[in-house]
Length: 214
Length: 216
Image 1 (cartoon, each protein chain N blue to C red):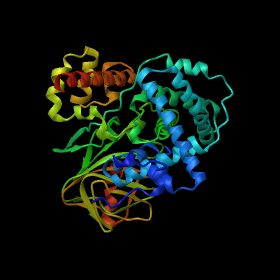
Image 2 (cartoon, chains in turn brown, cyan; image 1 turned 180 degrees about the vertical axis):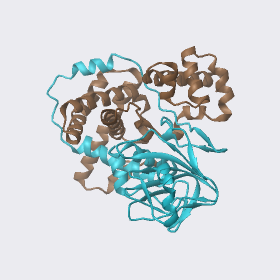
Image 3 (cartoon, chains in turn orange, brown; image 1 turned 135 degrees about the vertical axis):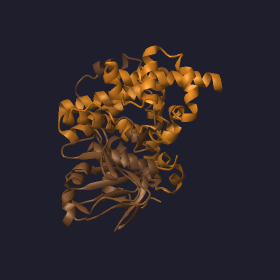
Image 4 (cartoon, rainbow over the protein chains, first blue to last red; image 1 turned 30 degrees about the vertical axis):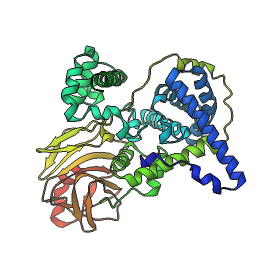
């Protein structure tokens, strides 16, 4: 997709850069490849060693960003923790073809900071950032296809295979079009639980539907 | 064709995460409809990332961070991507597909006067109010100005005023200097953000105060 194809330093530009720039470019590209490998190890094999390397690279920079922005050490600590937690949990969403690993982590960091500030300033725990700043492009999201009307029957069939708790959030969210908040209230469970159940259910649905129709 | 886009300054503030939720949502919805701004946003993300992660020199964190690393990696749970399906909304018998940016934003009860209906969205921030506004075919909003700013993003349909015509995706930011009176022939659904109630400034229209309150 066009939006993510813009490299900081397009490879076809290397040949016309002066020597000093070329070295800088190569350094950046090597660094990006290394960071991307670590992300891929975290995603693929839950490698703690790779995560520790990512942590060493990013955490001081995230802390510095947060301190310069908010001037508050405690808040900076929280933003480091939240960002790095999301890197650990969402590494599989990073796609090297879509952009640099640093850009992806910036997105994760900006989103975590936004949600945290909204929570502090407005007492809102709605975690809207990933809707306002998608971590990946919509048209590549396989889950999006599931919600198409033509797939509803298919989903309905497979819905029966899900545990009851997951089934009711999927039904509430997709068929009754309730928000996460409304579902949490209606089912009397925490908002985070609604979201995690929904995500698990969708991952499972996707897998089951894929198994039978590939 | 979309002719009205967020200013460069707004896109910078958006990509830095510095806008109030209501405005960030407005740009996110415009972004869904506008490939040009999508490309600009992607490039700004690259620029910010380079600034914070490649050019900036950061002091090492003095504290021992192994406890945080242990805590984070102790769980193997992963997050599945947000789903970008679009919700459908039906108001006064007309159905619309909503932008994915509103997937988790609660909308209040619809209330209306004449051909105008409004639902307040749960995106309040200080004196900023965000709403969905439906204007039925062949209706208009009486001429008004704003003390603060007014953002109108057309999600469906079109309208025109004395400054021009606008289609789905157009991002129209007005301030207190502007007077306008949008008219729609085919009807429209808009996302609006205001930070101060409107002022109706013509004779009889002053009696239309309720509309000002309705729209704010």
